[in-house]
Length: 573
Ligand code: HEM
Ligand code: SF4
Image (cartoon, rainbow, N blue to C red; front, side, top):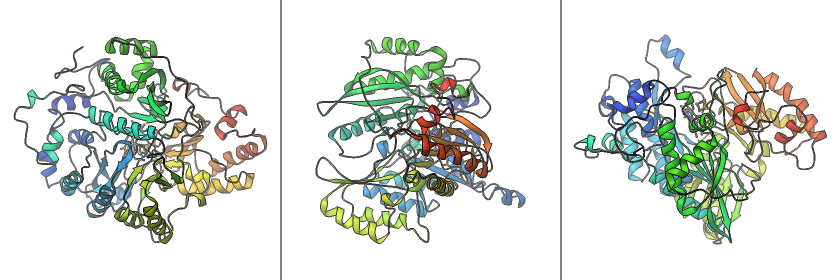
C-alpha cells in the first residue's frame, strides 16, 4: 500500500463520524479559524472540538458549576485545556517561566505535570487561546499532536546525565517526536497567523495520509532497571539495551494500552508484547512502519476497538511481525536480556556522570499550584530564575531539576529550604508512589473524583499500614476517574477506576515493575468498603509476606486475586 495521498484506510464497517470529520477537515483545518473568532459562544461545535485535539487542546467545562449554570439558563462554563508537547518532559528554565506566566495570565493559575511528561494548562477561555499558543510558540513550545489520532508526546526515562545512555535515549525520544509529527500547516495557519498554503490539495501527509491514525498512538523508551515510563503501556515500548556502557539498541514491545470501557469486555487494558531487538539507528524506521501498519489495519469504524492493541490481538503477533518484516525488508533480531526492578521515580539528589546533580522531588498528582500553606509554584518560579540546568517532567507526574552545578545546587537548596518544598524523605513511600489523573472538575469523561480525592485516601491507607505494622512500605497505588486509564491504574498494585460519584472498581495485583496488569477485586465500592476490604489484606501481607515480596505479588500468591497473564484475560476472575 502506498503511503502518500488522501486515501482513506477503512476496515470493518462504515467509517465512524470522526473519520468523516478528519477527511473533510482539509488536513486538520476544519472551520477552526472562524469558530475561534466567533464571540457568541465560549464553546465551539463538536466537529471542531474533534479537530482541536490534534492541535493539543480539548474544550471542557467546569463541572463543579454545571448544575448552577444550567439552573440560571447559562451555557456551561466553557474553557479549554492545552497540552504542551515536551518530548521526554524536557523544559528549559525560561520555558518553565513562560508556562508559569501563561498559567496565571490565561489559565487557572496552576500547571499539571502529566503522566506522559507533558504540561497541561486548564481553564483557558476561547478568546485567549490564540494569544496563549503564540506566547508558547515564542518560547519554542507547541501543542502540535499533543492529543488526537497521531503519535503523541514521546516519553523516556528522564533522569538527565544519570548515565551517557540517558542522554542518548533522550535524543532518540526527541527525534521520534519530530520525525513522526504531522506535516500539515494547519497549526501555523490557525494559531500563529502562518501564511495559508495556497492549494492544500497539494499538501500530503507522507506518514499519516489524510485520515491520520484510527486512534491515538504512544511511544515510550525505558532504560532498565527503571521502568518509570511503564514501557508496556505504550503502543510502542522501547527498552534500551546497553553494551559496554553505550546504547546498542532497543528491545521492541508492541500493542500496550490502558483504556477500556465499563461493561464491554471486548475492551481491556493490554501490555506490550516483545517482538525483537533492533539496532538504535533503525529506531525511527521501525516506529514509522509499525505506525503505518496501524494506520492501514486499525479499526476505523468503532473507535473503542481502534487502538493498536486490538489490531494486533485480532490478527495475532505473528501476523504483525510478518507484516513488519516484509515492509522493512529485514527481520528484527532476538529479544536481548534486560531486567526491570521498579516503575517509580528515584527521589532526592543524585550525582550525575558529569559531576553535576539531579534533584527529583515529589509533586502530588503533578499539580503545581500555590496554597496558603505550600507555595510550590512560587518556589519553582524562584528556582527557574536562577537554575542554570533544565527541568524534566517525570512519567510519574514528578519533577526533576537536572544538570545542576555544585554552585547552583547550594542556591537551589536554599530555595527548597525557604519554601519547605516537599522533602521526598518525609513523604511516605506509599504517597510517593501514588498517582491520579486529572478527573473532576475539568475532564468531561470523569465518573468519580481522582486527583482531588486520592491524597486523602492515601492518608487513610497510611493509617492502615501503620496498624498492620507495615511502616513505610511502598505499594504502587493509582486512581483514575474513569476506565480510560490516563494514570495507568490497571498497572498498579492497588488500582481504583471511577464508576460513579464516590464509587470505584478496586483492582489488585499489578506488578511492581509495571510487568503485570491487575485484576478486579471489588466492584463499585465507596471509601468505607475500600478500607474494610484492604485492612485484613494488609494485615495478612504484614504477617505472611516473604522477604522482599511486593504487595502485588503477594495478593496473587495468597490467592486473593488471580494473576492477569494477558490483557485478554483481564476481566476473567
Ligand atoms: C479512551 C481513552 C482516553 C480518552 C478518551 C482520554 C481522554 C482524556 C481527557 C479528556 C483528558 C483531559 C483531562 C483534563 O485535563 O481535564 C485526559 C488526560 C490525560 N490522559 Fe487521557 N484519555 C484516554 C486514555 C489515556 C491513556 C490510556 C493514557 C496513558 C496511559 C492517557 C494519558 C493522559 C494523560 C497523561 C493525561 C493528562 C492528565 C494527567 O496526567 O492526569 N489517556 N485524557
Ligand atoms: S482517566 Fe478518565 S477521568 Fe481521568 S483524565 Fe482520563 S479520561 Fe478523564
